[in-house]
Length: 409
Ligand SMILES: Cc1cc2nc3c(=O)[nH]c(=O)nc-3n(C[C@H](O)[C@H](O)[C@H](O)COP(=O)(O)OP(=O)(O)OC[C@H]3O[C@@H](n4cnc5c(N)ncnc54)[C@H](O)[C@@H]3O)c2cc1C
Ligand code: SF4
Ligand code: SF4
Image 1: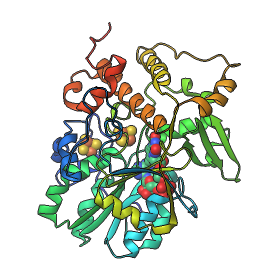
Image 2 (image 1 turned 180 degrees about the vertical axis):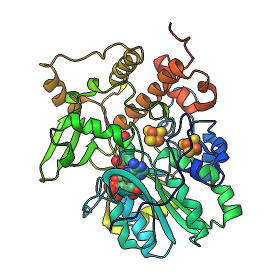
Image 3 (image 1 turned 90 degrees about the vertical axis):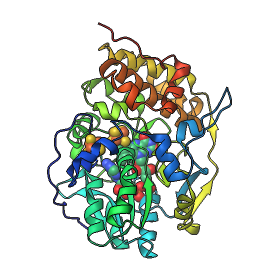
Image 4 (image 1 turned 30 degrees about the vertical axis):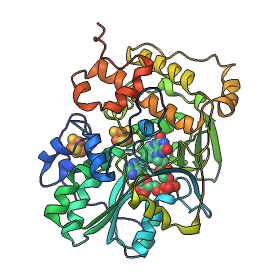
């Protein structure tokens, strides 16, 4: 199925914006209340969506809700029969397909590949279960997903499912009461994926050109939890490159936009179910956040294989090393690079002794929180007070970054 690009007004210029779609609606001023980057209220929205905000540990006791947000259960998961074209095994699009098949929703709003560039995300409204297959796979970039919600409601699709990344889902949840009150939204299921290190599709093509001599033939790319990037080629060839061999130092400093260097919700805490891979040890990783999320999981029946997630290794050293490099890069200093002879050894060791499973996911969430603080402290210190929620402050405190540092001259 090839989808047709939706007709939408152009996005007005906005600082700190990932074009989630709100600015392209008939009431673009709602960005002020709906934007993750302006004055987010995570505890308030968590309460509204899940009936409670995340547990923040008191004292030294550990609680994974600090890292991953409210959840009832976490699981390692895989579809017994992985779906062709899916990013992992296709749990995300299969849940949506089931909702349409069962008649539980009138439409699903998700991203499909743009007909001119399969790496470019394009928002679509899907009403036939068989068309969900056309949304499988990950695209790099942003596209105005939320701009399609009100047109879908106006067309009479009052029971919706939305698949999105955290900055899109924040805006959707912030607008949900208004959509229910004024536009007749009757039912909403949210299937979220984690998201990090996104950039524009144009910039992503620059990255592809660095990792492959035939970038036009790359059909799939994924950062795996075993410290490798998997690349699949049109010819069927599959390559796994160790993170350490990636040409990251050749990327320009603004390769990742400030939004994606400073966003505060890695794991999509306002979704009903989050479908990622970070805590999955080579499989998918599910966070069932509320009863609607549990219902979504149950739709898969015995198509899905489930087991409890594991956790091994210790993240602290890796996170501290990451922080040093982020601070160097933010100060314009070259990254501390490992000697070439050492790289294959460390690349072999990392999946074996580095943080694995949930510990890997905790490490990534802490790294993202530290990155947020370093970049905001240096480049947008005024936003620290309005943009950074309490849980991020708590995540960075053990690394000495909780209090704003004066900007270096
Ligand atoms: C930019 C980006 C970064 C990510 N980073 C991480 C990460 O660091 N850690 C992690 O655990 N998971 C991450 N994910 C999620 C992960 O890649 C898988 O998409 C997810 O685990 C679902 O796999 P699946 O096989 O169930 O998906 P599929 O069934 O193949 O469905 C993929 C779904 O993703 C949606 N989608 C694809 N591209 C985009 C996009 N650009 N914007 C919004 N929605 C999109 C589509 O609507 C589709 O429904 C990221 C996803 C994206 C889009
Ligand atoms: S990300 Fe969305 S809510 Fe925020 S400024 Fe951009 S369009 Fe508005
Ligand atoms: S990294 Fe954050 S800001 Fe960037 S696209 Fe993903 S969720 Fe949005």
